[in-house]
Figure 1 (cartoon, rainbow, N blue to C red):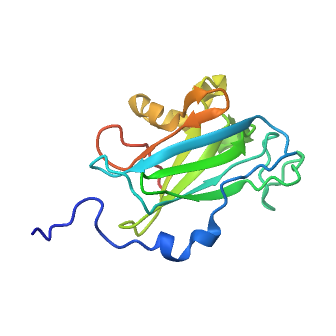
Figure 2 (figure 1 turned 120 degrees about the horizontal axis):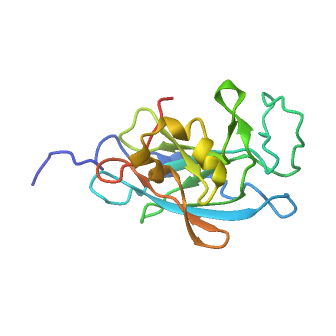
Length: 187
């Protein structure tokens, strides 16, 4: 018997014990304007094993590029019923999913428009601080000029761009360490 910790055995499985009431996987109920999209993926540890008790949290603007938050002072319309915020707990296979809409472009550093993207925070055992990343949309011309995506080394940018599985369905995986590791940002 070995007592050595592996990459998936550190602090403890707290998320499924007390936080399931926070799950919100549908950010855009029927009637919210915008291009509908299902985003699905998995959270994998450094050994390529599924993380079965992570919490994936997303924040995004609506189709007009306005956040449903009082600090967004843009003169753009709010979409009634659009949450702009969601959480999904991973299952035994490390899988998560969100039903949402493709966000519009929002101002970024220096007022430059950012490509449509979704901000992602991942909470899980063994992490005292969440990891932060982004999901960008495949085939989006604005990705080439996005000021934040440009900060990521060219050979790592693909880890931030979702893959189209079929119309309206995207896959984006979180790889926490090792080969193909997702690009993360300081928060």
